[in-house]
Image 1 (tube, rainbow, N blue to C red):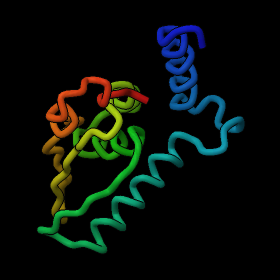
Image 2 (tube, rainbow, N blue to C red):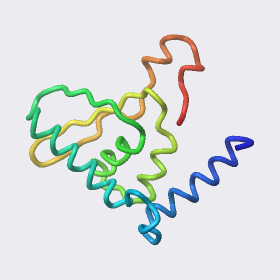
Image 3 (cartoon, one colour):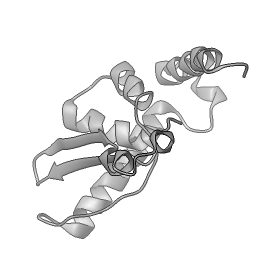
Length: 124
């Protein structure tokens, strides 16, 4: 791509097409299957670790946005928009019990900013 703006426009159109479900036969994993896979993984983490434990999970922006979707009750398009602002190596934190999932920290890069090198904070 020639520039970030061109990439963003194409990326946004492709992602909106994916979440629409209108072309599910053309993709290796549908949006709904992706969300279900993330839900299963989160359920497994919760079941294996129980309450009151600190658990570290390392992943990319899509799964983080999908878990935030559950915690905040977001729709598909707002969830997708979250992925566009999630920074590489950022920290997000969720609290959970048997009934609820709560977002307590989102997209923090304080640990990178403390290094004093702005180039460490990147997207995609």
